[in-house]
Image (tube, rainbow, N blue to C red; front, side, top):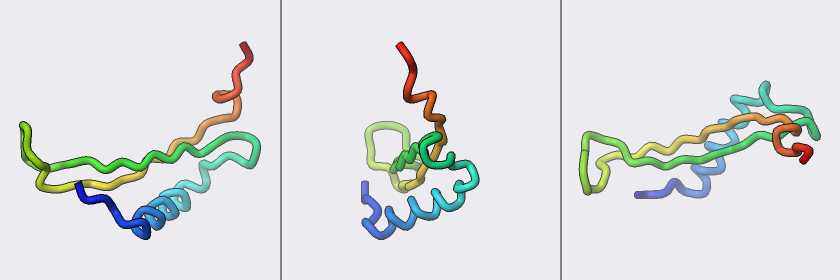
Length: 71
């Protein structure tokens, strides 16, 4: 699977974060989870190389409470 170049990766992360900036919590109130994904695509079913690949980035916000629970 051909990986994106460093420049492509950084630019994709920047564009994705900027496109979702209205959802980002203020400092200290939450986090932005960033998940890059490179997946093989195409009309192949079985043990073979995918004819095409898709590179995408998911982002998701989370509140500070979700990560810091009292026990």
